[in-house]
Length: 244
Image 1 (cartoon, rainbow, N blue to C red):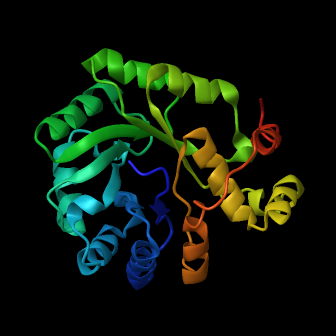
Image 2: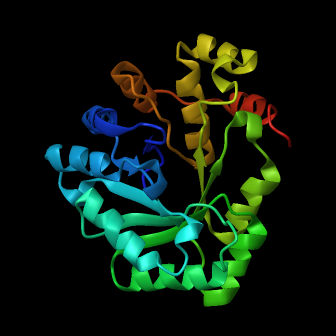
Image 3: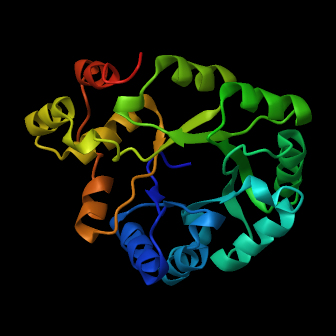
């Protein structure tokens, strides 16, 4: 699973195809979508038209909890829209009021059928991760949650690490991160954009990050984080912006 992916939340219609195509052209090899985003077909079209082999691109989609009881049909519909016979990662989009154990059992079945190479969750607490593992004996590979330097908590990071669950962050460039003075200072000193610093901070932590943009220039800029690193002091400065 590439640490850097392209998020597509709130990108609709043809814009989703154009943005996803720009991301793939810029070098992203990880696309994140969801049934409720209403753009799986458009993301799938960008993938199909990219000329890349299917195995070169890591594709994630998600199932909302109100589809409990119809999980496999939901995934098959997603696959049809995406134009692929499998996804690399399928997530329970949020806990909701579903029977999580029963829903996770269906996810395990989807993995066993080869419809999803890996399965995970999103917006789950550590206790809910433990709940689904107890129900099935199968641990989620990933938990996708809102995450940024301003939301950093060492205990949440440790809870995922201790369980062997990959922490994947979304909305990294929202919530005031791009205009925060401390992040801006690091960016200015390094000759980078605040977005690049935030994305690199995730990479330094080994956290998956899926920035979103519709602007081709920003898409190219956001993926260009391989040519610099953050010092331990810089990482500590950004960590301190969170809640401990």
